[in-house]
Image 1 (cartoon, rainbow, N blue to C red):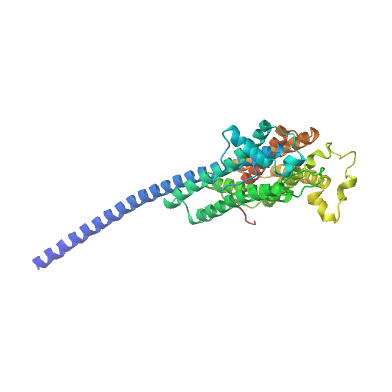
Image 2: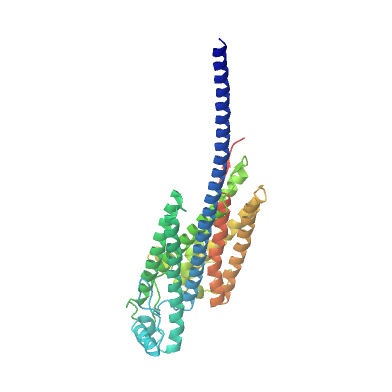
Length: 396
């Protein structure tokens, strides 16, 4: 009996010891598991920040490309390079090479009808403007593609990010092809009359700019999502939900106004009526519907194109101002308030730049600032949408 008691006692001691060991093991695993999860989360967050910085860097390069494109258009340099190579054209380096390149340009309508008195030195200037623009575009492709391959192989991308990266890569390729497709429209021998002005198709120009704006918007939005994740906002205020709707509508009008500006640039419509707010002492010019059929006026009549751009610009400014006034009724996170104030300030600055550019007959510095300002205004509108993205309404 005593022996049985001793055995039972020993078994109890053993059971208690095993239980304590198991508990210590569980605590140790939990402790190390928590450390592992924390470390893993920290590593993933670091990767997200690296990817976000890369996306914003690519977006910044697209912004510069749009600005360079505007300068190229305003200095009428876009048709100086008559060939296109996927990996880049060789820049002339000797006097003989420059002469060969100039002789190629002389075979096309812009030289024959418009620049027949152009000197070699003048040609060098417009050639270099277009060359810089093209090479910068190829630089965007390199800065995007090389890190993208590395990040993909190293597991930096989530499944959602991979889809974005594939879309962004496709758009970059499409943008390059669209650029050459646009230039080709100005090289075609369709300008026969001495009064014809050789220029690229305004439709292709608007498409080229539109793809650039979409590409920039995706880079900016995805980069901001990774670097400054939006805060979830639960509200019972309908005012805040109305604010979100106005913000989205304003963003849409900013984009639409910018695209209408491409038609203004493509038709040199900024030079037809250089007065504001009226157009030649009229609110609606006599020739606003001069072309037939009527729908041609909206994309081919310089007067109508400028009139539409004015109306869209004023509408956009009014919407952003309404957005700012409406935001005074709402309690917003700091970043959202900053975004609204920045959008409001930029909208008024952009409108001022537009009017000043018009009144001064479209000088290159002002026109460049105005075009770049449209993308900056879109940037602030996108930032605001990003901050309000996780806003959810719960009825009382």
